[in-house]
Length: 138
Image (cartoon, rainbow, N blue to C red; front, side, top):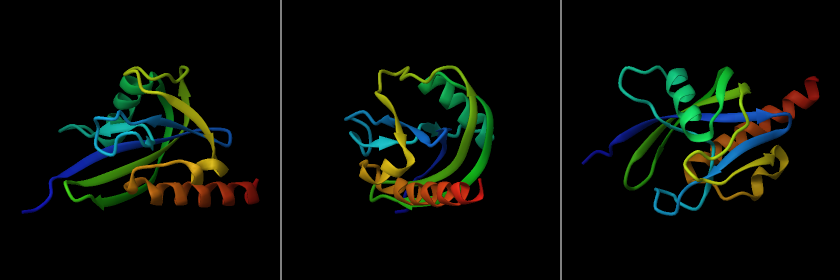
């Protein structure tokens, strides 16, 4: 039996040297871990459309600038996730958890100390590489 593939739009929301994280609900898959906000790409939606819709629904922000950052597929025992990750560099609104989920801004350097779902580990590494090169080039 093949795993169902869930296509997810993920936002790495950046403010200076900080990244916005949301806490997954305890009843969710990989619950109780911090994640980059986002959600499923619906039929007929582009990834940027899905990302904009999900971030408005979940964290109450309107994306004004985003760019493709990376894509990865990760197989959990019960399902496979295809993550389309976008760097969100500009938005309107002040993020808050519309679904009651806690949010927090985390320093890029502190991401190593956060518990993420397994699929998010490569994203953390890529963000840290990205910021390391940004600092050198600035």
